[in-house]
Length: 180
Image 1 (spheres, one colour):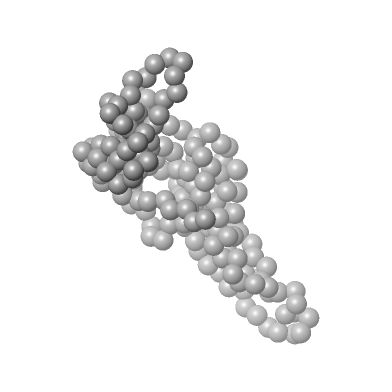
Image 2 (cartoon, rainbow, N blue to C red):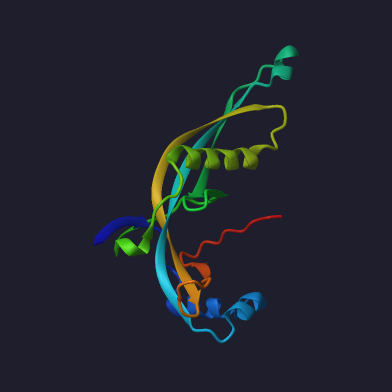
């Protein structure tokens, strides 16, 4: 059965994903791969693209001293992965394309909509928490369901009763970096 989805454009060719799966950049991946056969599969994982509006309210301490402050507003874009409920900041607006794909290549959300929205709001709070002394309120202005393409590299043969080793490789050209 075919499904039409809104997806980020596929940028990485399959040969490049095979190189990454083989561990040309990372010695740990190379050890995991070893001499095993690598099977690549293109999957589309559900993400939510939120635009939040953050309003900075007058500080209670500043109001005691009679300071007049204007409420400031800011918009921030957050992408929430609906399969892991992890959020990341996006600096530029996303560009999507409509694509028709089979149902087996699409992985939906594991979490409800409210939890995903809260996850994105928490990420937005962390991004702007440097404004000490201000009270902030966050509300979602818009939400768009988009799918990110990933190559899933499975190492070895899939046998029942054995643990499958796999590596997801983002095929849309966007990287998610985490800081310690």
